Image 1 (tube, rainbow over the protein chains, first blue to last red):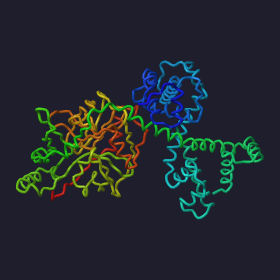
Image 2: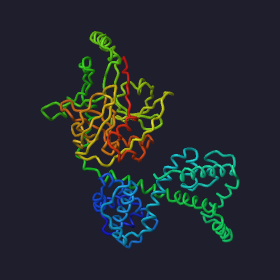
Image 3: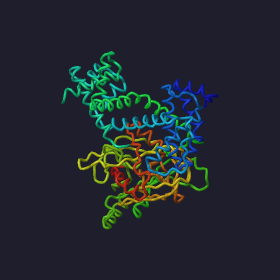
Image 4: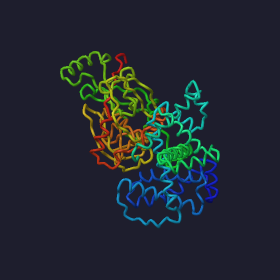
Length: 187
Length: 350
């Protein structure tokens, strides 16, 4: 397996979407990140879940250039996984035995942490809503918003007679998606 | 439909796409401050817009991460030896004579050169071969008589267990389906979809109008399969569902088959295709066979292969674990609704 000597090299490889960089990131930091979860009522299964989400959030931060490299990758990952686990605990109304909110204030500030959590929530909620939406709306929304296809293309793909009716249908789908997305309680 | 709604939607869209002129933008922002209803509409659309915008890249990252996990967590596999290869190379499939008395099971002979131990262990597929009239003693007797005289004409039923996935589709063990043209789940008629012979898996679909999809999600865990981990199983070795608990006793299956692992549950014929859960109620395998020689070694198809097989068929199980923090009784009560008895009548000619 490729070994990355420093954070800089690793971050560049992550930007280039190199598979070995993700593997390296995963292996190098898992044990370190799992400590907090295991010491605070989490199982190894929780570790797997939280750690996976941590990596997704982190790589997204890197690729959207939001990771400012003020701390090392390792401590940053630790801070994210810790946050996500605390959130999970509070969601399930479990008691947190040892928590020191100051602990990671330097690596991950309140706003950043909140924003990451919101991003994950949005992602899960949208996934769920899209599934519920069903076809053809799911397809239209995906084509337009996720794959950035034009209305013209949607008209052709879905066989609408005019741009106006394609537009209208897109609107109806969006309206339904919005309804589902904002109606569902916490996932 | 209210056309002004559409106008508002398009207006907000323009703003979010940053496709407005300075003037338009100004008046738009002014309206945001003044019109509360408009504002709340805007905020919702903005959040959804944001979610849609970041969705593609997060999905991609998620896939990248999920893709590498099996590779980095894989224990160094020692051999690729699979029991299926053994099956293919082994000689005759020995017929089981004991089924007349015990409602017994058939087994696969493994009497080829791969047997290096002094004792000859055998892999038993734990589907059940039964006469469909076995519940009545007189019928059984009749069957016994006819079977002795003309054994080839006895139609036999293979019993196993299956689990509900989604949209009338069920997962079971491939070897349960002796006759793909005659499959029943409870009393619903089914069609065979496809199979994965190597991993002993198959999909069937119920095509009966009286069937109602149960409200149940199995959640597949492909990551943590560790020794000594507690597991429980559900299956139909008889007409009623049977629960058994145990632990994972080995990371490999029959004769170190790496496609399977071993659990300590002593499962009986009819359990084939039945689910194995971890203590959180996540599906971690499908039971397939057992050792003939040793009690309490049941072989289970690893969940990774189940996931791969389902993915090939575009079936994705929900990741929402509804029973994570409930007790075992509640878990079993919930999953019971998705575990069924499956039967397949063997072709009379065979």
